Length: 473
Image (cartoon, rainbow, N blue to C red; front, side, top):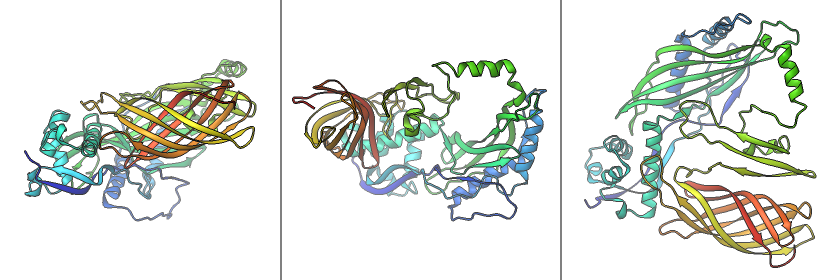
């Protein structure tokens, strides 16, 4: 069927996510009023009702520190608060399917069968069983009839809907909060995911992860709680369409204790074993941070081999296990990092490879500047969404600066523009940074991060490359 029209629009999946958090003691009469949209206020209200109406549905048997009693006391405290999930400035996730770009739609939309383009996309997804069918029904043509940009937008739309509705991916709400309760730091992290969707009706699973970290007294035999976690859970039914997003009152709200550990559980034997372990060169460090993406952790973990095993939640189907090492070199640390796919397009692209030619000029014995031009290829891969993504090719042209800390080690950074070498593709800002190792005078091994930002997307990769110099350092 020939396309009827081009529709220029913003298409959003209006799910809420952000990086705003609040910290402080709940105080009577305090307020932090900010302007929010109706959907955020609706969801915030449902989370607070979940806490207010939840009843205990699980227990932890432990004679040392009465964990159930502690959970009941904390729950009673939260129920007294007017808004334990606080007002906050919403940072939009609003997953953009297409931002001010051309989208092909069939005549039904123009004739009024759908109220908005979003309704057309949602209805089409629910009534198709594969990516190919989705493309055909949404656009009125097959993949071969779409431009590169149109393929990109439809691909993104399908991927987001697949994650949200089929995989039932979890979304954190922006209003994470932390506060003091007795001698403990308590953090509340509300989240939700789609349990069932029959356009336009939707059912959500709501959860409020409540984590506890307490200060243990030094004396032995303490009956205090050391740490733990419990969760508020409920379901909510609402509407999800192009014109309305709503969350109904919580259904069957409950409290589910996951784990509570007591201070007295650390025996003298454990204390001795811990002290002996700290004398060794190898440690198992339980840490929720991504060490490799936190620069301030590099020096802390230098001269260690580190592995990051990903999260242990059952719903995580694609864990990002990763690892590598950092090695001390005087006042600096360098390392190798493997296994992390990054960038907004990580679901669609796999291996990256390329080559470059450059010229460097010595400003001093330790500092060089130069320019490079090359070719980079991001290969497409078979996605979880039922189709194989096409690869992307770029010709990056960059200005670079290089500094040597010693005869063998240094760091390099570059900034420039990557010209698209793919039909219908678009270029974007390109940058790279990382350390290098010079095993021989004419050979440089570079380990770093490279990124190309274009339109609403970005492609990033951790790279290992070698360079042969035709002249001395």
